[in-house]
Length: 350
Image 1 (cartoon, rainbow, N blue to C red):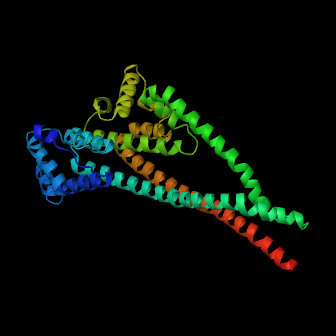
Image 2: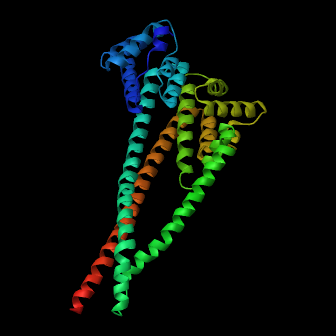
Image 3: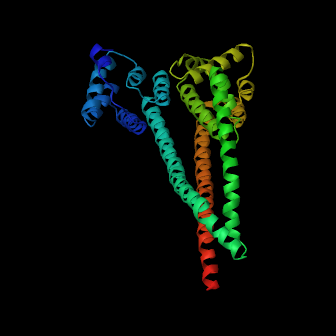
């Protein structure tokens, strides 16, 4: 790359900006634009800093410098770079760019939903926590002592508050122990494992493991389908995975599959031994090889994985949201009534 380009301070591209840029490049390519002209046209719509960065890349692009390497220098998301890398191998730039960007935009949108789901309840929980400490440490002790002097029974909601005050510290310490254990395990063992072994552990995690399994399966099948559609054999396609140094995990996957295929194993049987992928993939590959339409079977299955992933995220959101607000609501109502009901008792006494 040009020295001035490598020395200039890079601007921060958000994942959304990256995805929209790549999507528009794909749209221009589908209209017949050469890649360099498509990038040059889109540079006109960017901020001055980003426009300058793109202009610095055009000379290298016109000289045949791989586009995925340019995106790597621009600090683009690794998964988007992977889409571009494979697209430059099979030649379907327009379709791959648009598919990759759409996938990242959907994922970014889902992440924003999840952040919103947890942000507001957590903020509400913190505020409720401070209110709870005030009620439990200041107001309730006075009401309880007053009840005792007047020989009155404490109401149900006071018992709820007291029970929660006894359970909360235990839950807190248990949470601290669990989190500390995970942190210690991560630094002492997990991060030292090969990436493939790490992912095998991740997909076994209850509740969230299934999400990761679908993500890995979707990406692998959509890239493999594009490569096979372009006329590249399965073995050569897996070799391209192995050469993709920008995504070390999928590089390890490619290396593992190639090693097993060289021993005479069938692809569907090798995939059965990989727990990182959805096990339905084994039947899809077997069926696709039998009917000679493996590329189409993989493409449809990749879309199926994406749809299942989105459905699961939506269902999880609809489940978690009411539960969080329900717990906070019960606690707030209990505090309110624990304070209000004793006041009614006192008024009845006059």
